[in-house]
Amino acid sequence: MVLTQLNQTSSPQPTPPELRGYDYDLVIVGGGIVGLTLASALKDSGLNILLIEAKVASLAVTKGQAYAVHMLSALIYQGIGIWDKILPQIAKYRQVRLSDADYPDVVEFATTDISQDTPELGYVAEHQALLEPLQEFVQNCPNVTYLCPAEVVSTKYQADEVVINIKIGEQVKTVKSKLLVAADGSRSPIRQAVGIKTHGWKYWQSCIVAFVKPEKSHNDTAYERFWTSGPFAILPLPGNRCRIVWTAPHAEAKALCALDDEQFLQELSRRFGQHMGKLELLGDRFVFPVQLMQSDRYVLPRLALVGDAAHNCHPVGGQGLNLGIRDAAALAQVIQAAHQAGADIGNLQILKQYERWRQKENLTILGFTDLLDRMFSNQFPPVVFVRRLGLWFLQRVPILKVFMLKLMIGLKGKTPEIAKQSN
Image (cartoon, rainbow, N blue to C red):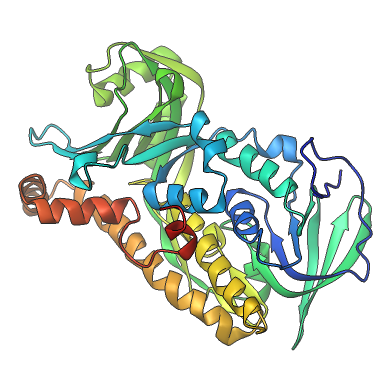
């Protein structure tokens, strides 16, 4: 099936476009949340865009994942004009409670820490609740052609263009573009093909994710609890459900997932606590390894990396997807400004503006999440003393508390213009 988005509100129809000899200003490889966000942010740019996704659209939305959506991400989607479609399907949280195992001091972040007018601190969205509105939005962008499913089989970078061979069913079509953007995940074939190196490490931990329904209300509160085995997050969802993000050493995580449902819920309740009553497990639980990765470069001539293709971080604090959304907004701003000025959007000097902006900010968050995990997944007495002293100060020193909260929800660093448009 090939999808062509041309001012239509109904579901995409399998009408293959004639691509041979058709030139695009921008080709985006990867029709996940980040790739779709980039295309959506460029709806009024005047750029002719091709978006390529390997999975069938109906299958892509079924991914059983959920994400924290931070304040800056919400502002970006408001600026794009899609937030009203997303908001009814997701949960808000008005409070965050940060604690260290059984240590009695709890750091409470509330909306009043930022502003009396702030209705919430952030949101939690299931994969489908983000992806479907983005897919529908892109379908109605007349400057975007959406190929799905289709696969890039080869690329050739030249001085003034990149030549891309795309497999659509049994056919291979060739297109030329000024710029190729890789939004194709942490194992990005596009990144690997050009030899961009990455640095980082795999953690000693894996992450267990599951959906549960508590007996009592979650009260629009997100929890981040640090145990010596790793961070443990409880994120509120619509319908009084919760998303559990449970980090533990590989062997422990594997053993936990091997338990039957009743035994798993018993172990879960020990960490979850009794404040929400009895828990009901909803659906399957999954485990995946955790890693940190930063690409040496985010750009080359005619190429830019965004999202997981450029970086990965520890899941503590729910930063990963939000970094990718910020990448998309930043790159959209840079290339739209270049296009309006009559510049070549694939020129390395133009793309370096995006790299300087996002590489440093992403590295800050990668370092922050790594420090949090190592500080709290630790029983060394001096480290325990320092981190608990830090929590004591964090709760009692307003300027420190506000700084930490703004860092976590994306309100530190450079704000993309599209996010300012929402205010």
